[in-house]
Image (cartoon, rainbow, N blue to C red):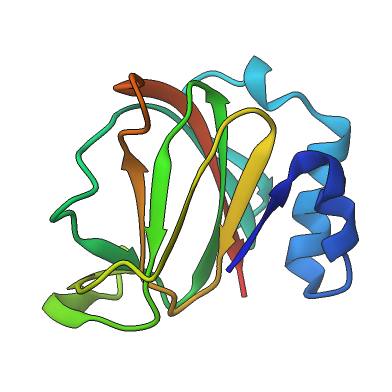
Length: 148
């Protein structure tokens, strides 16, 4: 997991070619101008899901994880709490078609997005995005899916 500001995103070039593709695209495009939905950057290797999300309570929320894709989470309006744990108890079998599994366990690290911050969750890292932060209950966000 990496949490930083968008102005520092370029520092992470070289970690993986698909991450480099995402970073180059983000440097030359305005995420806020994209309508809700899926936007292809490089086929199935890099794409962006833009959405409006109702936020949930962090307490008791399950963690999601992926095996194929990293999630680069960026809030476009509002702000959200996110949580991370190194491992958890499997709540349901992993769904390879959707590239998602769910686990429960204690939150080991957390932060708040918005105001130019991002968090990048790598495959296998249980994380819970879209949780309430302060008075924010709904936000507009982008999740860049990066095949690793």
